[in-house]
Amino acid sequence: MHDTKVRPFLKWAGGKYKLLDRLAPHLKGRKLIEPFVGGGSVFLNLDFERYLLGDINPDLINLYQCLKRERGQFISYAGKLFTKETNQKETFSALRDEFNQGAQGRRRAALFVYLNRHGYNGLCRYNKSGKFNVPFGRYSKPLFPEAAMLNFIKRARLADFVCADFRQIMNRARKGDVVYCDPPYVPLSASANFTAYAASAFGQQQQWELADRARHLASRGVKVVISNHDNPLTREIYQGASIQAFPVQRLISRDAGNRGKAKELMAIFE
Image (cartoon, rainbow, N blue to C red):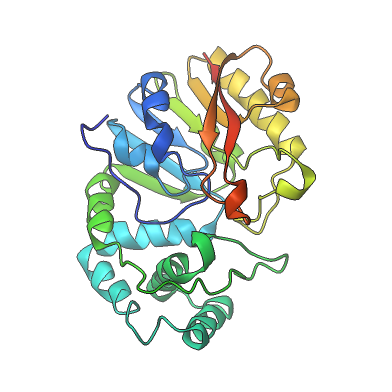
């Protein structure tokens, strides 16, 4: 791991920046595979020869692919959306509508960065119709993350970004690779369920299937590490794995007074 940690350029619910010191000792190998790459804190800070980085969210992967391909040109293009004029509720709504009405390619990628930085609490959320529905954040001056995007570009040259289901990504693992999974968490309560970062659901059936695939890969010489909440259900799902549990500060919650400590675990299959 780097002496100085690198922050991701996107705000991302459940990001693992603060858990890097716990994760790093368990993630060593030739190639890092992440089926739920999210904001990318893990791949940005751990040194591997290659990276296979996947996510089911096509907007996230489109952005990463555009940034890797166009580098500084994309940064200049996206930065034009960060002005005093665009930091208004009416403009935010208009740009969100443009995004939801089918903007494509680099324009969609730039809008995604804009929405991430101007939307409420940095959330990435879609309704059942697949429309991005995060409201305006009302920040005095949203930061355009140019320096963090440049850091991303340096590491991205070693990475392949794929929009795919976790099953497809894990099927590409080979002996000597290490797989880190940061799936949508099992909810601590019915009201705490936050799995709408992509338009498709990730429910209990998928949690069990992810663990089954982790066991299968471990039997073939591929180490798999999974993060999740620590509760009776996850303990049951991850039977047979080595479990490490610890408290973690919640960073995103509707109620600022409810951003206390949550119990998390790492399930290590090897």
